[in-house]
Amino acid sequence: MSALPVITAVGGINAAGRTSMHHGFRRMVFEALDAHRQQQTLDSLSALTGLSDRQQLLNATLIRELPEAVRITMASNGHSDAPVTLEMRNLDLPHPLPEGWQVTELNRHRSRVTLPAGAELRAPAASARRVSAAGQLPSGFDPATLYASRNHPRALQMAIYGVSDAFGMLGIPWDQLRGRLAPDEVAMFASNAMAQLDDHGLGGMMRAPSLGQRTTSKQCPLGLGEMTADFINAYVLRSPGGTGGMLGACATFLYNLERAIHAIRNGRARLVVVGTSEAPLVPEVLEGYRAMGALAEDEALAALDGAKQADLRRACRPFSDNCGFTMAESAQFAVVMDDSLALELGADILASVPDVFVHADGAKKSISSPGIGNYLTLGRAASLVRQLLGEDALRNNSVVHAHGTGTPQNRVTESHVLNEVAKAFAIRDWPVAAIKAYVGHSLGSAGGDQLASAAGTFQDGLLPGIATVDHFAADLHDSNLSFSREHRELRPSAALLNSKGFGGNNATAVMLSPDATLDLLRRRHGERALDSWRDRVSGTREAAADYERRALAGETAPDYHFNDGVLSGDDLSITDQDIRLPGWDQALTFRDDPGFDDYR
Image (cartoon, rainbow, N blue to C red; front, side):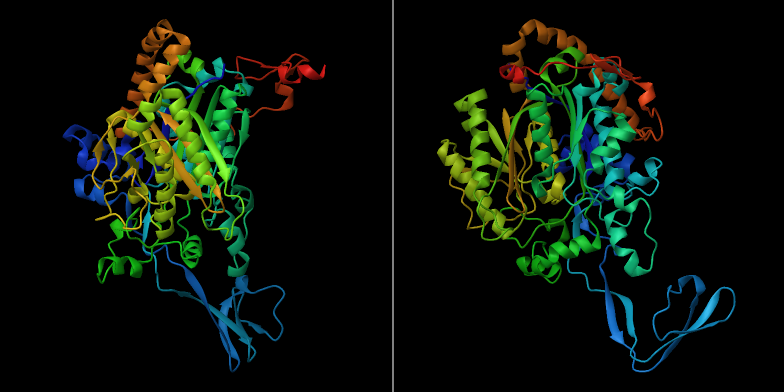
């Protein structure tokens, strides 16, 4: 019997705030919250930012104007008509000297340099910014200040914070889990879509020589896309378990989630940490997407409203008349267990993910254009909901978290996918959410933003509206869909998380509510097992509540263990039956694989 993968904690950070305890979700639906939950949301943001004024806290979150520092610098090129003489530091002189340079040493530190006529001259010049909005982490929050970050790229800083936040919500200490699980029963699947392209990663490595700067020993290795998983294994969990990172453009989070789900269902792991951490708000990356025509430019945004200035808070307008997507940064992580382990440990059950479906587009005219793969993923996901929960639950109690980027092409093509599947399964008025309206498009982390939001909907009974639009576009395919600007009170049994990635990377995850999940577990394990779980989960929830109290008081820090618990081969106990590792009570046991029985 296949295990049911259950989500036992979520954690991270994006433009809406901290993910754990559903704070980021509640910032998106802030207007629909009661006074108590509004204050909790504000307290969480205050702990992150250091701000206290209500309006300042709200203004410091979601999509907003980029700081002036995030501006592309272009090179102004030319040639001298006559010799040019200047003074410069001796340390800055190139070696060897270019042909024709005349250098006269003035002192130990400086020299006079004469360049010949016709020499190439290049100087940095700030270009006019055409894109001014992005989904940025809350203003004043800097993950680098929370631990010994040692020039880590920003995405890795965010990953350390995000996975630590997830384990805070889990309420079960990692050392306790290491005492219960063998090393091969744990896995980590995490990555990002764009790797690390800031100055501390691949971006700095590529720019340094042309800028006359020194390439560091960290930029190349720390810039790799799978470093998200590597960092967490080495410095947070200190885990030698299964590892890897899948890349699938905007579907990257769901690709990693698929690996986690299948590892648990196939019995190859019992606990998997899955996630992504994306930090693409780098001038060159923004310019690259802008040059593709993908981003919402200020001038085009203003034209949509017939205004002189763009309304940057409403830059992303999914399923309305729009002009491009809005880039964002985000780190999102989930702790996933098999159902038996979750019940045994008394882990909280936020949801379950029975499967994730992935399909390519097949033959394409343009690598960037959408194709047919998403019809396959969404159709299979809807069919699984029907299989597990029944026809009525699919038709009347499920919702869709659309990819919803805010581009003209996406609104037409994705609405057609959703509408055709809805018609095929006789779903009327299928509720559709598009949370990029609030947090922007975090590329590889977009599916993680959706998962965290769906978990919030299951908890609070609110489905975020698409509040940045004043109407929905006339060219939508929506005969069987339900779009809303207002937040809706809904308690769905299932949510379908949809991703349409660049290059033909499509994924749809099925996410079941806690109630639907417990009903499935009751059928498999019986009521007595659930009663025992309820006795244990109360302690887990209290531990999570203690983390919440400390986080609101600013008394938490990311888990980061540099050079702590490092093992060598001499520390292991190896036999032909198992391998024992210090710090792990359970041995890694060699077992015959029954899949090869037919070959004996």
